[in-house]
Image (cartoon, rainbow, N blue to C red; front, top):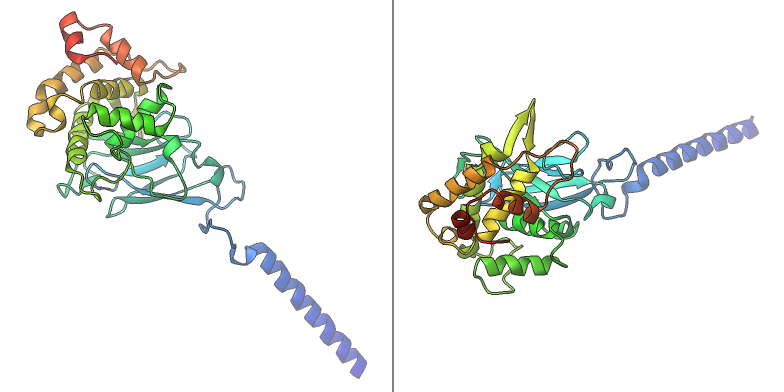
Length: 298
């Protein structure tokens, strides 16, 4: 009887040990890697998602939609990781580690929903911001603003070999010293020149909402060619007075932009998107000589 009891005791502990070992394997014992998010990556790979964090601003934007734009259409599609900004304008976007730096991040600032902390009011018109895929990292803050949006569009043209070159081109247009940090948080650094320009840029983009954005069911759509044409127009006119002036003085330029976008063909279904320079050139093709001279050349 004693031997039988000893044998049963050993078998019981053996069973307990196997169960504990199985539980340890299944849970990964807390995973010692840097990716601590409980979700899995896209495609059901079982890979732990990586939290790409950052901030969105004109002023800091609250309740803006942030997503990884895997097909480059500037709209949130099924299967694209998304989130919303918090009360400080920050976001944490959980994506597959393999996708970090592979796709751009897009932000939809939505009329009546997104709040601009510059004014503590919801924005009057929707607009789109983005961050170049080359700027997306999993280790530092990914700041998204009208400036990052212009840099992303400059990179899309293929005319710039690096983010720094594109940033320098932007600072030159704004008549700021070469080397100015165009990708950083200008609110945190208290750079009022960049902040003012960003405010004016977001206002101009919002004024073109009806030309650029639409709705398909519950999905906010973006006409990519018109959007990029708009960004080309702004880039080519950043040295003009609206960049650092009061927003009330932007009326003429905004009206000209509205007219040009209205005459720009919508993006053909299934066709490759224009980049900013191509879209701008196509828009300029239909303008009179006097207007074309006023708008400059890309």
